[in-house]
Length: 225
Image (cartoon, rainbow, N blue to C red; front, side, top):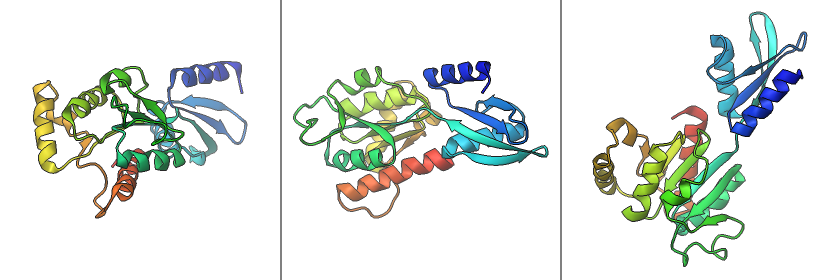
């Protein structure tokens, strides 16, 4: 790898920027591709490689190129150390999310209830302000308490988080939309929230709800839907 490319790759990774290294298989030529750079064929290839986080070979203009993704880590911030979070956290960790559970209620956010999970007992908006909320981040609110959920949702809406989900009925979400609108968020912004959170699979119990939430987040990550 050329020194200039190596140094830029290291800088991109240090800054948390997703990038693809494209290597021509005929002569070893290399290019650094961010998802929206280069010709349409390179940009499309880079976007797909980053979305699925998987190396692949593509033929462009008669040459074969190996696309290698360098993505920042996946992150999941769960607001509310509730029963669903106890199932969601380990499931997400198994699918390579770095999971943080945020809840100022110290009787809920305990190591005994969340063994091996990163816990933060700051208020959600204060906690999220200290973390990276980029295009590889997801935020899910589970408390049913507007004092905890709404500030977290506001922080997520002001970020590039790829997935924002909120637990609660459609009636609950209607009230949530009104409160967020009063804070100045537009309809398009509020529409980023998946609520009621999770795919509709007829889930019963915390574990099945957690599965529906994680499945929806992964679907958005991989397909954009």
